[in-house]
Amino acid sequence: MAPGAQFAAKRLGKELTKISKGLPAGIVLVQGDNFEEWLLDIQVLDSNPLYMGQTYRLKFKFGSSYPIEPPEVVFVKLPDRPIPIHPHIYSNGIICLDLLGQQGWSPVQNVESVCMSLQSMLTGNTKNERPPGDEEFVRGNRLRPKDIDFYYHDNNV
Image (tube, rainbow, N blue to C red; front, side, top):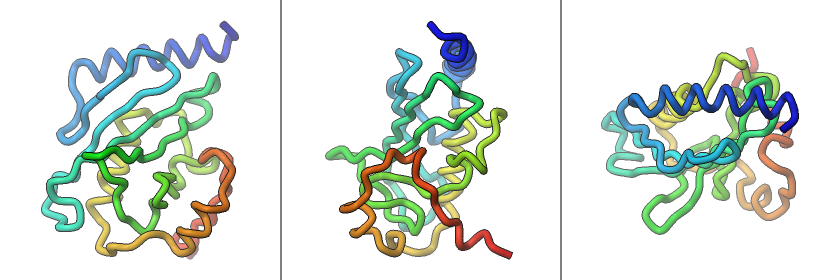
């Protein structure tokens, strides 16, 4: 195992130990039996009518440079787990969130904090819509989520 991969495995082992002691409400580890890919379910716990009663599946893919580099995080569609409709979530599950990009990521972040950020992002949403250009993006994108250079237009001052 390469030194970077050993560091990633050690960090993920610590995160898994912490997660096994409990996660915040609305976050459940579904699968975390390896250090390459984890599945978690999240729910929005407030009364946002857009997401009330829904559970969403997240897939985390970890590279050998984790936590120096962010994990790849996407929503996964299952028969009982839709992809949430949100202005920063494409219909293929790719999430446009600066926290998940190279510029917004910090090694102090972890699986739990990413899930909590996504819960918060959904909680604060009032628009039942996909990002502009969703169909074209989904049809034409061939990049992995971590390789997409999103333009965060609503973060401009």
